Length: 279
Length: 288
Image 1 (cartoon, rainbow over the protein chains, first blue to last red):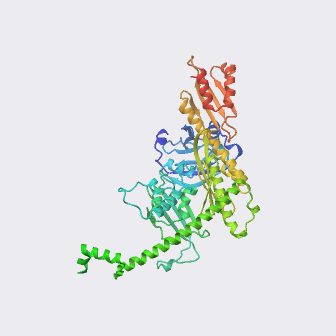
Image 2 (image 1 turned 60 degrees about the vertical axis):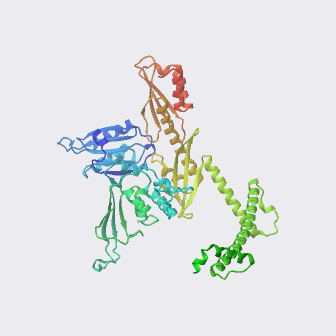
Image 3 (image 1 turned 90 degrees about the vertical axis):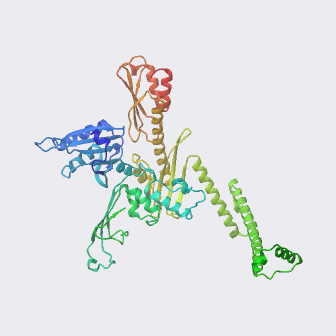
């Protein structure tokens, strides 16, 4: 387990959101949570091996090895759960669907919340997923003082060289920083948009125009550091300004999986079948 | 031939002589230059007149603003110009006054407001401070299009923002901001005090804490005997305050917590911030 803590990029981490907190949820004690979780999970299913460890005074790491009725717990494929007490977020790695309801039930009871739901955020790097959800990166907000371009990017090599479109570049930088954060941003890898919208025509593909049925498409953006690449797109003017709410919802809502239906008015017009745009 | 004439010393002298005698040159370029010079002089005169007019207006606005600052109502001063010409400087003076008040509020540690998107959204910056150090600044963006809603914020998740918003946001915005600021301030001060404990009192080890900093467990060693140590638990029930509400003392030497000097030390922790209390105890020699 210590190996997993040191290398948080081994599997894919999924985030969960606990809702309907009861009144005394914030005054949870570590010992209390440990005992409750162990007892609840042991009640729900026999033959599990649970190990709970506290890391850096704030986060709790739980390692669960699942076993069947007469089979010993499988320590080769354990599930890891990371939770900060007093925050409504849980991060789970390596959980199969059979054991999902059991784990959710135990978590909900132990943390004294009403229910748990999928936060639609997943990534390989645990720290990135955590930082995005809890806002631990440098977010920019509009202030009365507009920061000059020199502060954010290195100054030109020769003092006589001047940037002609300095104001526009500053504005674009400000918009990009507001939408995607500044400096070291969490390293997300993908953003997936599932579109269930009607095909609007165009491109000469008339046979696919069928006004009744929705046209299912999946658009996925993949990158080594997605937020940085989107930031660069906006600050260099490649992407639209103001930033499309589809892109800015990644940081605003802390998700990277979106389902877009026709009732919302924000349908992109340039959808193509199963296209993958690499940024 | 003409160029040779122009570059010649004699031609220069000839031109100067013509100018001195008052003969106008027939060269079209020179005529254009004179024309342009005349136009520029006229423009300078018009700009000077405009500048003087603006100076008078600014002076008027400054006078009205000075009156407003002193609390004199401008309606009482009888002006011959009539109401319409008086309203604009009044409005501008009022606007400058409001901006100054807002700036002063921000400087004394209140919140700063910025209007974005031409009035559709408002961004508040709440700054926190302890004694004479500025701590973190937290931001809150509100969407004003259909009722007041929270758009974006960077407040840590351990603070119950949704509950506070449900109570107050729609009805009483200043009260909401006030309670939010107290919560955020309390958290920032507690985190800062924890940092000070770790930096200044290194012999005391922090055993347990949590994201909201509502529980602090410290282990202090007693000088002299090696085996005894004291476990201090500080509980902060009130999330807006930076002083603990409940202090418990435990030790492996059972009689120690009952001694009067330790009881006094316990009550000290309820009144004085923990890092100062620990330093005082260390100076008195009660802990290492």
